[in-house]
Length: 56
Image (cartoon, rainbow, N blue to C red):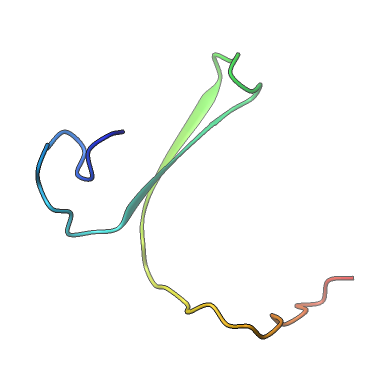
């Protein structure tokens, strides 16, 4: 993707969009999954350590 708005050169985006493309084997696969998303919220970065959430 080279345009901020897919298929519309020179248009200013109005949404934060993301496209994720995965494949089974890096660079050599006929099996791919494509997912699209829209940014729902942001969280400012802090210098505090995030909560553990039960991880060990």
